[in-house]
Image (cartoon, rainbow over all chains, first blue to last red; front, side):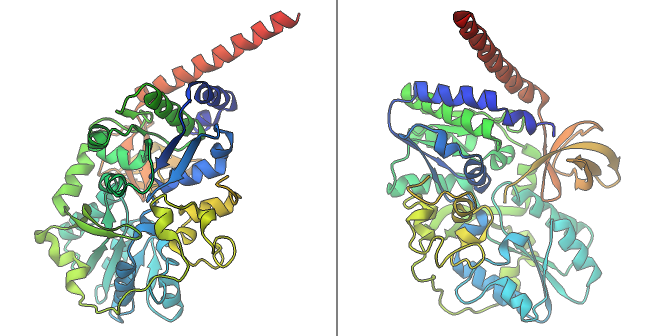
Length: 365
Length: 85
């Protein structure tokens, strides 16, 4: 497949690995902040071919995993209403809230439907004018413009029974929050490729400037990731901290300005609660006042009991890079993809699921 | 969840929609977030929408780098052989 197969060339990978080994002297921890990168790294076995002193940590890069329990509980409460058709991306179905998940509620009879895009959710709303159709708006900057478009489309077509429950998250503020927490020594970020397709490279510049942390935006094939590690190693060894783009076929410094405009028109930045991290200022998106008629959090007044976290689950620490999945007592024993306890094992792009699926079970390898 | 795949635009349709071929399968994709898309161009598809056009120049730059790396590898192999024989 064009733009994919050429980025899996073993000869190029070998050369890049040699380059990393040659340049890398200092022990370093690089963090990827994208679930798709996490999967690609585990699947291609990149950790195993790097020098021992170059470690890759997985950060809060999966929007499903970082959704706070309170938001999942509220979404479930909305989904249970008899006047609601609840629509969601499939990834959210099995994510545990405090007391249940959407899949269980669907089995109990709630009208919950998995959709591939907001097009499908809008179609359901149009075909069911007597029901309220709510879309669970989960995602980073990559997904937010597509959901913003659905609001504009609903407004244009007078679809008045379409609502979203927005738990959107923004990536750069979470990166800064992790650095401010200072729990893990980080020497560089592998920045998310498709978030950056939308936002460009500029929003990471404060990380390089204020925190002196090198950032490289990269794609998702093994060659892309090895190249980004090589670029990060060179920055570290040269004492530099700048934002570089390795994924030039998709990312420009300004990003997709048309997508940004759509997002800005519909959403405003708000504080948001992240699982395992807590509230991060200005790290979420909520609907602007002139679109509040579409805001499920305002339309549906749901009351949920206090949240609770699963006993023994280390998802919080894993999302902050403090623990590796295999450091969790439940990993691979009480918690597996078949019977997941925490969200990082549920989501296909969660760190625990990726480590489990590709056999990275001991000592981080 | 931020998965996006490259696809080739095969047909432009009404209301800013297009048929895009991804790995041999055609699927309908929204073009509302991108500008001036032409048939034959590649776009990155995420959750039913093209989130950007693939930058041919950016891709070529990487390919050139890869070719250089491979050439270096082949030269190295040739010189290894010289030493042996």
